[in-house]
Length: 256
Image (cartoon, rainbow, N blue to C red; front, side, top):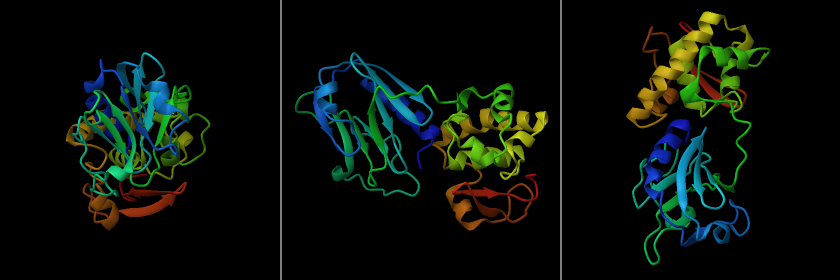
């Protein structure tokens, strides 16, 4: 499932479109605002950014916001920076294109959002003011302030995009595993040293996973999540629970 790591890979690939004019395209009107193509046609792409899990295409007109849902992925100039998402189809069916932007008349789309389950969304000038600190800029001080008074489970709090933007289910489990933190712990119960370890795990481990290709490349990879074998660190069987409606995979021995 796309998390901030996948969005960062797509942001980097989308930089190839900067300086091009949008000459037209097509959009699934069920996932985009009315008259979307009319509002962006003729505008130049001036920059590409990422906020949390959203890729933003700045233009001379409105900013285009791309949210990928659970199964959406981006294809730029015919190439897929991520060929297949975990838990999604490996097919690239044109019928699943929810957005296609043209850069040259008569040519193939310069950018496509392909989403078999139609859970992604295309926005114009999306409001990103409510997002928390990006996962690339986390510090212990910022986490301490965000956790204050939060009695919910730390795993649930980490998935709140107003706390840390860009963290998804797999990455949250991964950093909690590295930090040795029980995902059930109330966020406000973490001591200063525990918050520091968690911030360090986010800053150090997620860039490694980004270089490897995304959120599925950690210790708690999808195959591990489904089988729950002995923990790589201490040999204790991993456990799979449900927290806030999401699956949490963790080690009861070293995460406390």
